[in-house]
Structures are given as structure tokens and as C-alpha cells.
Image (cartoon, rainbow, N blue to C red; front, top):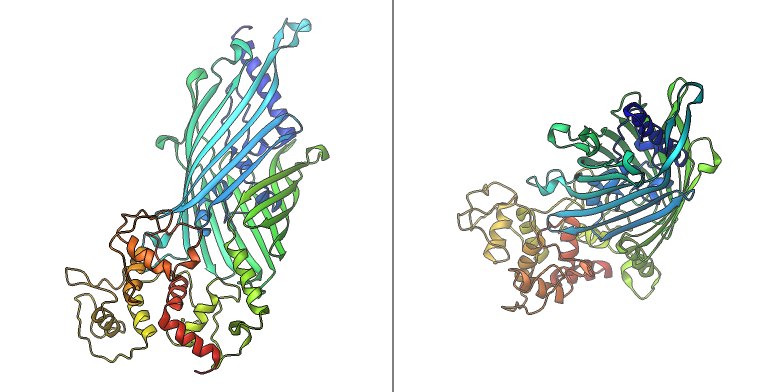
Length: 578
């Protein structure tokens, strides 16, 4: 150990050595070691926690986010997938930088929760000291140190309609991250003592489905100011520093696919474009662009451009790094590979591999529909019904609830909107469900309202339907004399209403769990058991029930189509008798 000024130089030299290493490997360079002072800079490892899928598309993912990688790039994307999601990636860059990325997320009655973990480590970093003075001065190696950095993320994502009335905000999702940082050096003797620290930060993300083919995303990463706890504290010299905020804005454009600009039942082609702005000084705004193409459902091809800032003699510039990737989906399991350039050096080109799980609902549903079309003995896909089936711009042929929706719409049981959309993800209200129940039974209503409620205007369209549905005991009002027609209906409430509607026998007690998240003592357990037994909730097979989740219009169509009353009418429709 040398004098105080030399000690600072030791630390600076170690910092510069690490900076050279990390710049070479580029796995961490985008997160910036700000090694211009004797103090080490805190790292946000979110840059490498994105998985091979986004890396293959140049990390243009803010508007596309729909799996566990959303934790690290836009947590609002967690709400776009109701399945259990898993993701893992690990490797060693050039044999020196070892990293591991883990992510998991799953649905709950309150929304989708996720957990992420990233660790990166560099071993055997040389430490130097200056000996002598003047012409005899020399830099000598005094030892080695190891660097280790970890990031722990707790994430949440949900549609905005969960918090608003009347289904408002069903096309907007939000997400938040709470992040904990741990970082430090080990070994290296007294010069590296206490060179470790910890801190926290938070992210805030949004997704907006502008229309059926365009989604815009926005993510504020590390948006907490230091006064609110967004900081990193080093034990050495008790130094506190902020973590630069990163603003990402981008969009996903469905060019080809079930809901794309050009409709296709089998192929999908998406274009993604993002911009990234870091609050640190002298950091240029960079762009990310990527494409994702599914020639068929099991194979995906990707390519992209991932811009990154770089130091130049004139200040800062931008590297245009080309990327490419391949993805395979089998039974909901994902295998992704990404090729990524880093700067001008060919030896910095890196290969990434991820293994994960996204669920098999979409793939299995497409397979079922293709089988149905090929079976001549099943009339659903072969017989041309009379009258001609209705169609909607936002309900493609391979949509999971497409058949129930078009059958009920053609029968006049469920209506679409004036713009030729059905809005399948819009959440159902009590008033809308009352209308649906009465229409499914085929009852005709006039203007007479026998059962009146203080919050249901007599002149409203729903009033006679609500009156008849209550009179028939399909649905009931509240003790305060209200019906609350704009209140959204949960799955547990829907099960109870449909059990009454179908005249099902409900046990007073249920001894076993009907769904993994429905304990026997749950208030709706008897109704859920009864409706599950006749196949009403078949679409939730293998998943949690989500008793507090609001049913959507697509779910309502699926549920009603499974009741005997609607089944009979659908059979008549497709047989051509009606």
C-alpha cells in the first residue's frame, strides 16, 4: 500500500483495468462503469437480463413485451400472458465474464407477479501500484481481485381496468419493478477493503393497445430520485450515488398475422422500433429495431439492430450492432438463440442461449382448430350455416373463443360494436351479463320493469333484462336496493350466476380443491365445482381459476356457449335448421 494519492491511483488503475475488460466483453459496457474517480460506479444489470429472444431482435422489446423478459425491459408486459412464465440464461463471455439470468412470473387474483435475478462476475482483475518517482517510476501489479454484481427484481403487471370502473382502461397495462442491487470486490488486500455496497431503485412501465395491430410501450427505468431511496451506497468512504434513469419508448406493429394489417391464420410478422435515452451526461439517444417472423407456430426467425453508445476521440458515438436469432416453441417450452455483435471487434461477437416456458394455450388452440377443419365428420367447420356467420375485425379465425363469439353474435345473443369489433378482452358488467342471460334463454322482453332498482333507470336498455333476470333468480340485487349494473363480474361470481342459470345442483360443502387456487372453504367453491363438472370452465384446464379476475366478453361467450340452452341453438344454427 502506498501513500494516499498513490492509493487513489491504485483504485483508479484497477477501475480502468475493469473498464477495459468490460468494454471488451461489452456485456456490461452499456450499463457504464463510470471509472473517472477513485469511487467505483454502481451497475444496473437489467441490460443483460433480457433473454435471448429480445437480444435477437436488437432489444426492441418495449412494445412487444409479453413474457418473463418483460421484467427487465417493461414490466407492464407481464399482464399479456396468463400462464406461468419461466426464463433462464447463463454463460461465460470470452471465458472471463460469467453471468446467470433467471426470471419467473405467474398470475394471481391481484394481477401478475414476477421475480428476476441477475448475477455477473469477473475474476482475476489485476491491481497495480506506482513505485518510485521521476524516471524510476513504474507501475507494478500488487495483487488480484474478483468483481461480483447481483440484481434482484420484484415485479408486478396488470391491466388498468383492474383499478377503474366500467371496464375503462382494458387496452392499457401498467407494471412496476422494485430492484435491489448488490455489488463489490473480494480479495486484493487492504486497498480493496470495503469496496462493496448496495442500493435500490424502481421501474415504471406502460403498454397501450392502440388498435388491433399496433401497441405502444413506455418504460421509466430507475425513476426513483435519491431523496426517495433511489441510490447506491458504497461502504468504502460511505459514498452515495444515484443510478441514471433510462427512458425507453417504442412500438410493436403487427404486419402479418391473426390480428395484423394483413390477416393470416398461420404466419406472423412483427416489426418493433424503440428509442432509448439515458439521463447521464454525454449519452446520445440510441435506437433499437427488430423483426420477429413465425413461418409456422413452432419456429421463429429474428433479426435486429441494437445501437449502443461508445467512446470516441471526439466524445461519444454510437455502435450499430447487428443481431439475429432463432426460436423454437414445443408444448409451451421455448428454446431461443441470439447472435449479437458488439462494436467493431469480431472477437466480441457473442452467442446467447435461453430456455424458458410461456404456456401452450395458443399453440394447442391452433392445433385443435386445424384438426376440426380437417375432420369431415364434424360439421362445425365443414357445414356452411344459414344465415351466414358474422365476423369481427378483432376476432381472427384462430382466436381461442372465435367460434362461440361468432355463433352467439349470429344468433343475436351477443352483439358487436358499430365499428365491426367485438372487443373480446373488454370486461363484462353485471348489467351486460343480465342481458346476455335473458337472450341466451330466448325470452322476449318489452318495456315493462317489474323488479326495480334505485341505480337502474327505467328507460335504460338494460332495465327490462335486469328485471327479468332477477325475477328468474339468475342474478340478484344488493340489500341496499341497488343492482350496481356497471360493476364488473369476477369469475367466482360468474360461476355462481351460471350455476343458478343452468339449474345445477350445488353441494353444501366441497371436500377437495376444484382448482389449485380454490380452497374447499372458498365461498364460491360449490358453484365452481358444479360448473366445472359440466365443462363450463374447460378453457381454464391446467391453470388456476383466478376467482377475483374479471371475466371478459370472450370468456362470457365461451361460458354461455357451453350451457345447454345455447348449445341447442348453436346446433340448430350449424345444421342449417335455423
